[in-house]
Length: 156
Image (cartoon, rainbow, N blue to C red):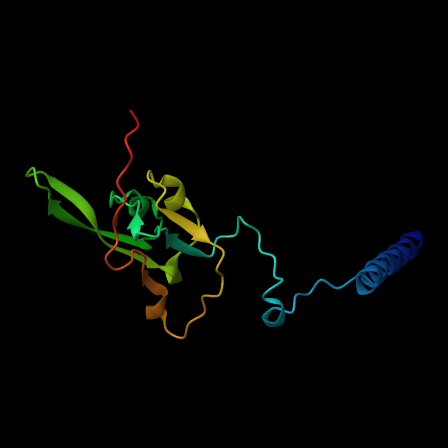
């Protein structure tokens, strides 16, 4: 009989505690963001990863050497690096970047490609508005048309 009443009081205590928590949360200041209306004031963490970019300078030069390390480290094959062979004036063959393809739809945003890039040619941006109607639009070519490899400066 005592166990029966202990069970009832334990249930009532649990109910009152749950209702107390609910009332505290109900009267707390709301933190819901009104997303489309507050685009200008929206604060996004700088560590947030949303879209892979290849940085180009004002002369349309990039730092990608087409080594393919980023594609090798990508766990699900999101990145495809298509190199081209170029013959220099002294007869040597040099590998340059032909196409750098990135599939945003299959990216897990793990950041392994950015970490492993020896020339720091790619970065993740905070641009999170990537909604499209077809999956084909999620496959992007990251190197710009006519872009070339930025030559390294030799410090003597």
